[in-house]
Image (cartoon, rainbow, N blue to C red):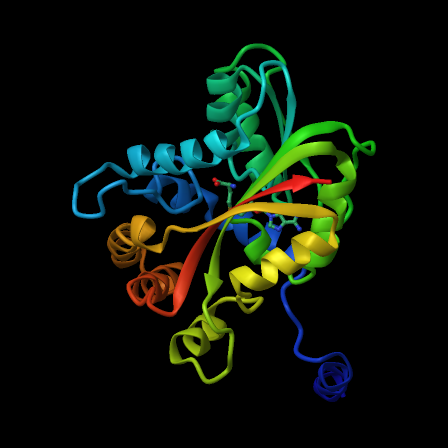
Length: 276
Ligand code: SAH
């Protein structure tokens, strides 16, 4: 009966995708391994020269710099980090630009790690971390001077709601910078995408679709840069870690490594937008 109900539900609602709670549970269990692999971050690295060796931390730092430079906040401003992981990007941006960064994440474990690792390393009050869902941000309207989302929208099925929420807490004229994996031609016929969809959920969207969603949420898109070549060397980090951790997580990391190597169909977008 249970199975039948589940089947009926999925016919009525379509296939079920991970909820924000599911995403938080996944990060509660994997953040240690992921930050260990990615130099303290949970985002891919940026290689200025993809043929030159960089440590995972240096490549991760460079990605954060790419975001910070596009956001370019003025001293003392209040910035929102949507999906802050364990807080390393927030700490870097807060100290580089002398701004205040509030990070939110759907993982309780990440809030604790972020507090213990970065709240004390930065000046008092320069960063703070909260458990919150991007679908329902617990902040006043227009209370931030800028925001960024590094590889967090990719987890959200309802990107429209997330972007509307971010728009409402940003003051007009402020910036939002997004980095995410995107699909060139999201279609069930694409073999790489079909593989991605088997292991990861929700399905990827295209950079064009993200831009349309941004415009509908009240943003003007200022710049879109495809940096797939700069992030590709990250696949080696996933491969090495995947082989060493094994199990279900290891399998996922290996799968992701091989997907990243086929970036001819997958892109990586760095998008800068302005709240109108
Ligand atoms: N930006 C961080 C972490 C990226 S991992 C870094 O670069 O290191 C993805 C992050 O998105 C995680 O912190 C996860 O908790 C967060 N996330 C995913 N869905 C979310 C949601 N609905 N609300 C808030 N955070 C979310």
